[in-house]
Length: 387
Image 1: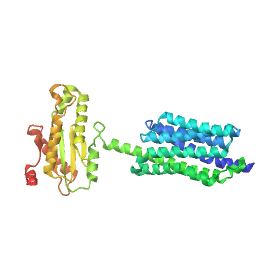
Image 2 (image 1 turned 60 degrees about the vertical axis):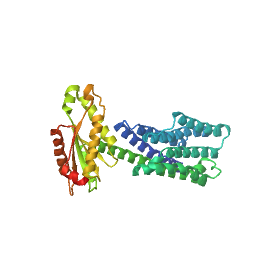
Image 3 (image 1 turned 180 degrees about the vertical axis):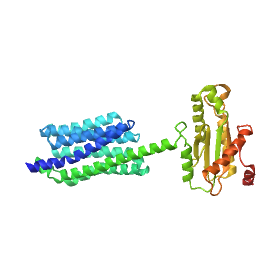
């Protein structure tokens, strides 16, 4: 009797671990309500624990009823886990597909419980079904294999989890399930199942928590380094990105929207914000993938062009200037045309951001004082670069 109690207690340990992870997912969701996949994962953990308790404690006591009830909980847990992971990465299967999968599994388990009782078939139905569900989810998330390191780890664990179901069942069960509760509880199949569920379940849960932690850290970094209005780098993010850039050649363009105060005074700050967003979009569309684009503050923007000469940078600045002047802004009448003035400075050896920016900013105000809607650079350097 004591041995049976000890065995049941040990068998419930994986379920207890899953409950802890489920509680962790719930706490993360309460902190970050936007991450709905964490709430789904918490529900999946609850269903798995209920399935384990149902099976291990023999509740309900009838073999057939127990098989069906535990299958409902386990299948729901697997489907919710797959749905949560797909939701996190913007992928999904139709809701009817999940319901159909649950219905087919439970129907098959019911048939081989009440109509044609066969424990071996029931085991294979569940293991193959769960393997297929996880492999299908991994297939939908195969792009993670090229993603962040933590996403690649999650993908590998999910794929291995799906792939292990059939070979593990074949190697530990064969073609005939053990007869009797004691024989089944002591079988290689049951012991290996508990070990694999603990190993893969813990690994998957830790990987999901790691992904969540990285997501939160990246969001904090974006909020710190990105201008929320335009989606471009803010001054801090721009300077940090410039400092990390290992380039020895390039140029900085600094631009300022002409007569921006008049837009705010005439139409309000909402209209001014719309103009800032539009200018940011114009710059983004005209930039190369290697360019750094930022809003340094107010109506001032900057673009760092790595590996480019001053003459090329001057031509790029002119292209940006014309693109802004030709863009239709959401303002009434003649003010729908907005212009900007530009200053261009070339990166010098051992330049720090302050020095490069200071030169470009002085040239920007040369352009402003020269009549606005123009680009100013060191004409001598441009002539030398072009010759």
